[in-house]
Length: 124
Image (cartoon, rainbow, N blue to C red):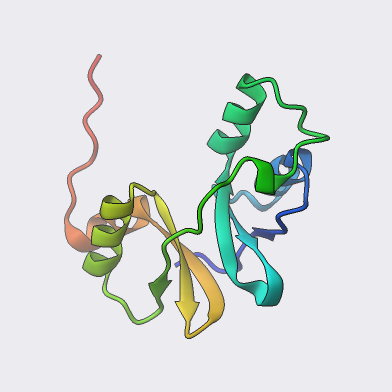
């Protein structure tokens, strides 16, 4: 589990998200709403897609490019449970909660050794 958690508010602009991703060396930011609850996640890939779509990173807000609440996992869940959830939801990262409190994030690549998942094959 990654701690500390890199978070951002839905009203922040994409330029701020890009800066935070670079500065924190995080691959994902958890978008938090009232009370610090996760309402979405945003990645460098999401920002890249927005730029490719012609969006201005200084004017576009996070809430304009993320659309769904991310699945979350409880801090006491097993690695296998987290992997199953990620695969079912089609996500690479989950916010980790302890009750209703955001305590970290976990990424699919971090869980590969724990559940003995094969590395993705690169075809050339």
